[in-house]
Length: 383
Image (tube, rainbow, N blue to C red; front, side):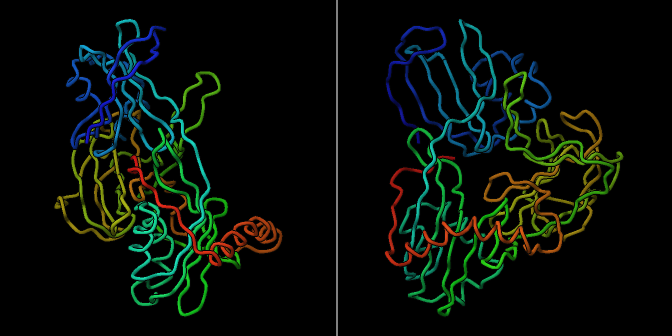
């Protein structure tokens, strides 16, 4: 869907000009270089980018909504394309010359509370009551490993959620962050709280959504996951949506969990890449390979620990390593937080701090259960 609006725009030239804004969707198979060529913009802009920026451009997903601005002659003035939830690519015309950089995404956040009695299933009912498919997905992802949602939940059971929603240009943006939740089954309440990047029950026992195996024997971690930090000198945000494992060229790469191969081939800055999907919400990316495993093909089922390729330095790479990316519902998350370890149990002073931190959320959940209220999102969810 394309939304057009004729508007007055104060651009970087400092003049008011008549312009047309459009909301578009990033095409499947489109690369950043291909986008520049399609809009007849000098490819030097791409080739002059740093290694990190070229790799970041590879992260633009098909189906991502983005915004363009053109003058009344159709000439492209500005493009804003989200790359994840924290940073966006900006292409703009500066006094007749195009420039490209990455800037923070400006969002507003609001805390929301939602509760209801179930009529069908948690997923269906959350979606119907709020219109927020991503909230439904996040809720199911938290509980599906600990509760049989098809058998344990019956009509009349209650649920409640405290979450933060981001808004960009007055539309819901990205995925909601669930701070606390409660799901009732057989008159028993199951509470979950977000704390230091993990989910715990009321006793401080970790609730694990999924666990992964380390995909390669490595010498060191050359680059860690980051949603974006501001460089103190350059004043630029540069996220890194994955972990880079430095390893010897030719080292075996193994599947971190079971799944189906949904992509295999050369992918821009990532070079030789394999993408494996696990279930409906988890996607794993293995990049910069020197070779694919013999017999590995699209739609093949692979098991945890199965060899899928070898470490290399294809694409935009400064040396042999494996770039390992983990995406939950297309949102990048830190792989190191999901590598198989024993479940953590908070105790002592740590548990005291946890108990203090969750008290306000417990109160919000209990109040929500008493009043049963919800607010429906009426706007289309972006990205």
